[in-house]
Image (cartoon, rainbow, N blue to C red):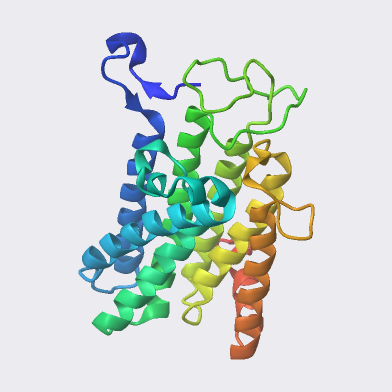
Length: 274
């Protein structure tokens, strides 16, 4: 793959990381999609400016803390100064989602904004950002897949690839997640057009991504991230199960679960002309 852009033109003197560019593109497209969703619902997009900055900061902090606490605690306990070495990598998507959500909730409460409605507007943007970001993972060689003999397997040969599995055909698991998250993005967009009860769009995005992540984890080869306590599941798979249970329980308590499934069936119904 290509961890750096234009490397063959400008050499090693100036390296432009593909992953960093993909993240920048993911945040940009996510912001534009959030504005688009707001305008589609004939709402003022102005509050999104400050909110997006807070969400971005929350995602960075959350993804870093999650990596430190759940994935490499023993290392950072011995080297606490490296917690702040953000340029060395070490970010986790679930931590980013949690941090961004907390930041959004706090900002909305402080500014008196409708929290659930704002989260609904950000839901498609979140999925779009994840899909684009995973393209950066694929190019950089992080989050690599298990070895496979399938005809669509890929091999990482570049000396700067982040995977330690070199010249071995592996699952392009990042692309699996790109496709499935992109499909989920389409579903959530259609569902949002039904004007469901507030909070349901964000709930569908969270549950849908948790299912996608649980599935794709079976093809991940980077076992260094650890396992969920008392199970053979990966940490992300365990968190996916907890997330689904938490969201569905919250919807049941509010009496919104039936409305959610009814709206999804209607959104996915083929459109007919005439």
